[in-house]
Image 1 (cartoon, rainbow, N blue to C red):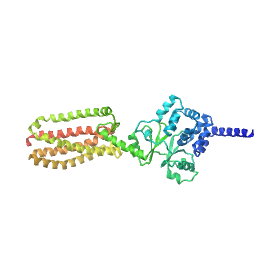
Image 2: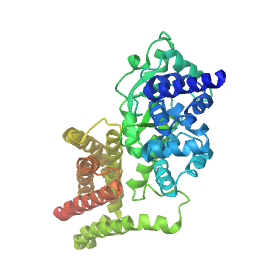
Image 3: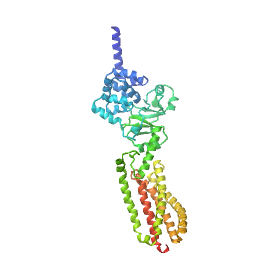
Image 4: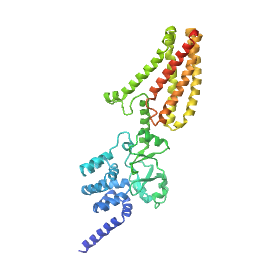
Amino acid sequence: MRSDSATAGLEALVSGYVRLFPGEVARALEAAPPDDASALLAARPVAHAADVVRRLGPGQAAATLARLPARAARRLVEHLGAARSAVLLARLEPDDRDRLLGLVATKMARELGDLTRYPPDTAGALMDPRVAAFPGDTPVKTVLGRLRRRRAHRVYDVFVVDPEGQLTGVVPLQEIALSPGDTRLGTLAQPSVPKVAATAGREEIVEEMAGGATPSLAVVDYEGRLLGVLRYAALMAAAESEASADIQTMVGASKEERALSPVLFAVRKRLPWLQINLGTAFLAASVVGLFEETIQRVTALAILLPVVAGQSGNGGAQALAVTMRGLFLREIRARSWPRVLLKEVGVGALNGLAVAIVCAVGVYLWSRSPGLSLVIGVAMVLSMVVAGMAGAAIPTALSALGQDPAQSSSIILTTVTDVAGFFTFLGLATLFARML
């Protein structure tokens, strides 16, 4: 009888402590195995258990939730609400997550499923939810003990969260290893944490990554709660994917298209830009049509037209590639356009002069016409200067307008270089027709 009375008294004492001091209980459970934590919380009223879970680190909270009995887990998920429960469910293995989703009401399960599934190529889809995160008042010795049990996962940074799970700081692992065991994690935290929203796309991930060398990037929800971490491999994959996507958009293909995408999907994404390209080709052809009479008198002009257009196109493509790289790496901004433009004018002029000399000599040896050699030489210089300016101006202007600078830049550039090359060459030929 005394034993039953003592047991009841101890249970009342534990229940009262959990109700009055959930923060202290959470700190104690951070160092306990998840099975022990779940056993303790399963016997408590759901409101008291939820107060403790909210104060646990995200990793420990998720592991504890996964080990709760079905009834206790369902009540806890429903009490925490969809937004907070989704943060924990996202950290679980698919089997555990599906099991818990099967416990709750259909409407809430659908909402939780939507919150834990992110579109492809977003930070949420690329992140690793098994992140090392602890409350700021966790002792260093507790952190190290938990990390030793995670030998299968590499850890470079440890994140600090507040009782609501919001990200408040980061601590390099080396600093934790060198600190006394009773040091509180929050005293070591650096408040400036590289992070992105779970819905951020590849471009935003790469932009944040370019802000500074970091082995990991925190992923947070719309309220700043820590969801997971993008590790170096995922960051590099995102950077490579963004670079390859930019190559596609420069020529009018969609970022969403893949090598094995359905035929109709590829056609739907490519055809609009091909139609636009057709229209620009007619524009270039109309420029040639303006000088039809000149071409009829000097048929050599028609033979040499591709030479001028081809060289100016290559020069413009070089300027475009260098400018695009500068924008992507944040070496330049839209406000830098005067310097970039001036540089490309100089490069275009000098390259054009060097190419023009060789071209003029070749044309003279072929045609024995000094006038034709002079016309194509001058046209080469002018068209390459215009091409260099266009190659720098097009992506810079798109960036200044808030548009993707890679979006079909090469199609616009090809139009400009063709029109400039045809107009300068044929225009000069018309002006100096008597010399040809």
